[in-house]
Image (cartoon, rainbow, N blue to C red; front, side, top):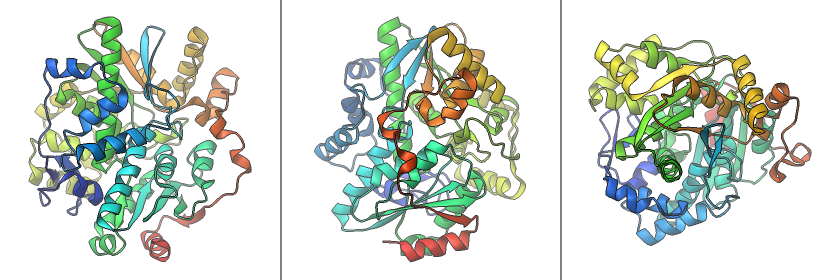
Length: 462
C-alpha cells in the first residue's frame, strides 16, 4: 500500500514513511492510494476475532511494509494495558448501544490510536537509528494520550500545546503531572484553533521540520485514523451478533473530524453502516457544513464539551479530497480559498453528497446537561458531556430501521464539573485520577506566537 497527499505533490510513500512524515511536505494530509474493500464473507471471517487480532487484520492491509510478526507484537503491546479485556466493549443502555472507548491508560478514546502510534514511532526510530521531536496541539484528550503513549521512550521528545484554561482540570492535570524528561507541556494563551494553526505552520516550515525531525501525533497522522477504523468493525460485529441487524447507525461526537472520518473509511471498506451521524456542540462548523453547505469560520465558544471547541477541522481536508473526486488541484484551490476567506464553497451536487454521507445536528450546553441528567435517571449510567452530545444528536437523527451505536469518547470523571452540574453527583474517580492534584507539575505558559514556540522547541529538542 502506497500513500499520497491530498494536495498532489507527495506520492508513493510506504506506510512507515507516511507515519513519520505526519503532515505531508506539500501541506496536505496523507491518504492511502486505495481503500481495501471487504466482502460479506471477509467480514464474517473477522467477526469472531478478539480486538487485537481484529486490529492486526485491518491495519495490516495498510501497513504492508511492516513485517507481520513485528506488527502483531506492536498491536498486542499497544492494547496490553487496557483495563477491559474487550478493549472497546459495547454496552446496551436505554435501547441504544454505547461503544466504550475509554478503557485505556488516560481514559479517553485517543488511547486506542496513540498507544499504537507511540509504539510504532519507537519501532521505526530503533530500526533506522533516528530521533524524533513530536509536536502536537490538543483540545483536551489527545495531549495526555500522546504523552502517555511516548513518555520515557528512547529517541523521542514530545511537545504538546494546549489552550490555557480551556481544557478540563483533569485533562490539564493528566498532561502537566507527567514529569518524564522527554515530555514538554506548553499552555498557549489562546484557543485550540490558535494552537493547531501554529502546529500546522511549523510543520509547513520544511527546513525547521527536517532540522528537528518533527513528527505528528494529531489526527493529521494517518496512523491515528487507521487505528480508529478498527473499532467501527468491532462495534458492528458486537451489535449484529446481538440483534441480527443488517446495518447500524453510528453517532460520533467530533470536533476535528478525525473520529468520524475513521467511520467513513470503515464504511467504504464494507462495514454495513447505514448512517454516520456527526454530533457537534455550539461550535458547529461541521453541522452547518453538512446541513446547509456553510463551512465558514465563526468564533470559538467555550463549552462543557471542550474537546469539541474547534472551528477549523483539520481532517475535513481528507474527506474534501474524496468529495472533489480525488482531484488534488481542486483541493489546493479550495484550501487556499479557505485560508484567505475563511470559508469553502460547494456546488449543489456536493451539498447533496455531504447530506448523503452524513447526518448531523448540534446541541448547546443546556441540552448536554439535560441529556446527562435524563439518561442517568433512566439507566443509572453516567455520560461524559461529549458522549452526551453524541447520544442527543444520535437520537434526533437516527432512523428507526437500524440499531443506534453511540461512541463514548471519555470517562465521565474527566469532566466531573459537568456531571456534578447535571446530576448533583461526582462520578467515582478511577484509581488513575486519585491524587493527581498533589503531584508535581511540568508546564510553561507561552503566547500564541509561532516564533516563540519554535525557539522553545529548538532549545529543548532531542
